[in-house]
Image (cartoon, rainbow, N blue to C red; front, top):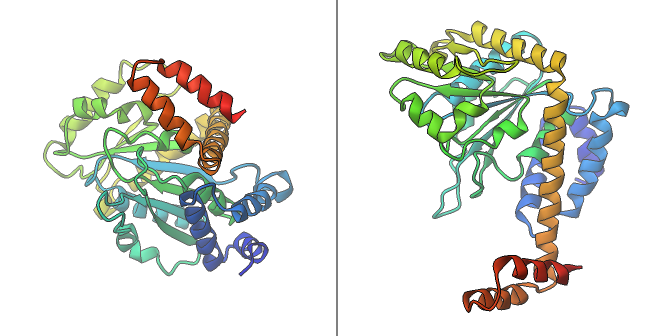
Length: 325
């Protein structure tokens, strides 16, 4: 199917077209220099999500869920899908799974935990392999987000791989970042060490029916209390496997969305997201150009000079950039 037809079908919300376009996005991200068809897709979607499309840039509400493996991210994602569907919202899910460093493969098992939504035409769930990219997301996630946005999703849930101390990229991609913790999954000091406490807009203590849950809540409150700023992250207790606490979580998310709109923070975050996206694409194309022009040999020679103490790394980098013109 040609790109124009795929784009038209995706804008009508047809799942097969959306799936094929996300596959195109993933393949283009993996290919040196990308895929020129992706430029055509993104150009078409720019009007689909811009003023002419009537939705505004990123008309979808983007919620990121992050936390260590085993805290219940997938189950909590299922709870949120159910809650937003009750509101009549179309929901997209990007669930990023870690790729094996040995085989390069990924289980892509998050859809198994969301089977109750598999037949709902207003829910699109896509598992994506991280393909070795650190930070909890895949390289293709921002572009896949645009596909779901243009396909008419009102809410997009981005679930990260749960990689611990590198799990911060989602905060630069989402409007609201939910950090999940659970009793017995490490103390607050470990979470602070991982850096995830700093990216949270909403904390969720999941598996709150277990021993130690209230102690974890108190520890989080003591951590959050000294924070000063216009937004202090609320702490919500849930038992996602039973659906308990879902209303409190949705209320906290709605409160943060209202804060984003009223404070102008939403625009600031989306501008930062756009800058990151442009920079990432520009650097990827620069690397592709570098490889296509055979500059690796020049880099090897500069590396040899650096090892031989004939130059310093900054001078070598200046020479390399000068060669690129």
